[in-house]
Image (cartoon, rainbow, N blue to C red; front, side, top):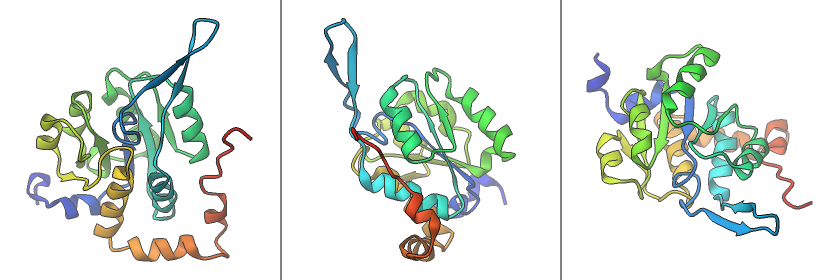
Amino acid sequence: MSLDLLSPENRARRIKVLLFDVDGVLTNGDITIIPLPDGKGLEVKSFSAHDGMGISIARLGGLKIGFVTKRNSQVVAIRARDLKIDHLYQGQSHKMDAVTQIMADENCTLDEIAYVGDDIIDLPVMRKVGLAIATANARKQVKLMAHYITPLPGGQGAGRDAIDFILGARGILDQTIEEYLDPTNPESRKADIGQGNM
C-alpha cells in the first residue's frame, strides 16, 4: 500500500524515531532574555513536565528521541541532557541536514521518522517524514501538512500528545505506562532526573 494512502495510525505504527522542534513545540514559544551586566543575556525557557514524562515513556516503548532546532540554547542542551535525548541538533537552519544524519545513525528510513513542528521552518522535514505532527498552536501552513494535530499546544503537553498517539497506535501505551510504574524497573528510576539549580 502506498504511504500516501495510510491513515495517521498506520503511519504511527512504523515509527522508530520521534523528532521534536523545540520553541513552540516543547515550549510555548516565548523566549525570555534576562540582560546580564557583561552585556550578554540569560535565556529562559519553560518545558512541560508532562512532555518530560512522555519522553521517558517513549524510550521504554522503544522510540529514539531527538531535538532539532534552529536556535542555539544552553537551556535546551540542559533539558536534552536531563531527558537523555538520543539526538540533539541545535543551530539548524535547514533541518533536513540533521534528519539525514539521524537516519544514517539509526539505520532507518524517512517512513520510520515522526517529526513534531509548529512553524514554517519545520515544513521541509514534515513534507518528507512518515508521520508529520503539528501542535495545536501551529501555523496554518503546518497544520495543513500534518497527518496528526495534537490536542494541546506547545509547552502544555503537545509532546506528550504526540507520544501517546504513536504508542497508542502501536497498541503499547498502557503496557509501557505500567512498565514505567513498575518499582523494579531500573529505567524509570533513571528517567528525567534534572539537577536544576542544585
